[in-house]
Amino acid sequence: GNSVTQMEGPVTLSEEAFLTINCTYTATGYPSLFWYVQYPGEGLQLLLKATKADDKGSNKGFEATYRKETTSFHLEKGSVQVSDSAVYFCALSRPGGTSYGKLTFGQGTILTVHP
Amino acid sequence: DTEVTQTPKHLVMGMTNKKSLKCEQHMGHRAMYWYKQKAKKPPELMFVYSYEKLSINESVPSRFSPECPNSSLLNLHLHALQPEDSALYLCASSRPDRENEKLFFGSGTQLSVL
Image (cartoon, rainbow over all chains, first blue to last red):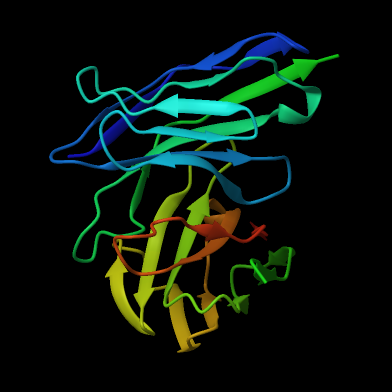
């Protein structure tokens, strides 16, 4: 079956530090890959996505590249801010038929950024 | 309007109560979802509705009863819940096609069962 493995947190960084959150996946075929972010007391928001190999998703300074050869989708940001403190979820979706929207999530990584 | 609105934001209920969670979106999305999220865990899919018809039930106990009265509304009826059902219940919507799998989530209802 499908699965997503994220690096264990929590991750604590100082403002302007470089961020990497590792994500690897197991899936048959060609899944779409996502990073969702959840701020305290809120639902999830899509941060970025990639739908095929070598695609790079980017948003708000965050980037992730779909690497089929290493089955990875690592999240990076060059300079984090305090406002980036949140829980980050890597997820995959196997599109087609009734599978759309059926996301498989990683366990989530808590990020705390200090001033 | 790119919002999914959930009410109430917080709910406390006893094990013999009947209550309902409500979800509304006006983005024209024809797929709507209920997810359950326990603290410090990822969301778990419960139900998927496509064009107002139930398409996925992830073996959810019958004390949870979903309803999709129209293309904008999604309800989750609760009856005889257990304390272990306490969680954040998230509603989401999307276009039900391959071209746009982006899910829009509401802020959730924090449910406590006493």
